[in-house]
Image 1 (cartoon, rainbow, N blue to C red):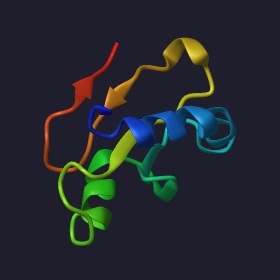
Image 2 (image 1 turned 90 degrees about the vertical axis):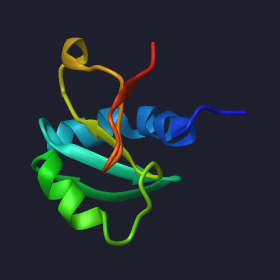
Image 3 (image 1 turned 45 degrees about the horizontal axis):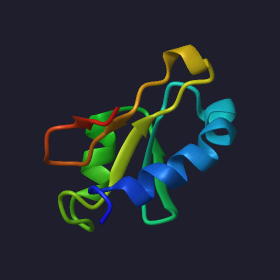
Length: 85
């Protein structure tokens, strides 16, 4: 069984380069294999998503053009981010 949000994280990895080229420094929110939105910051994302999505069901990741700046942080509105290594 997958860890929570791992399906979303694998999808994020498959589209990360493409999104980062266009949205460097922004935050992407993903549920399943659907990009729910691109946001300027975490607060903006939470405000936009919390009414329609249960806690723990949305992956939120920072986008970076520079591969050295990338870090795997699995987070979702309302819970503490978890880092997978």
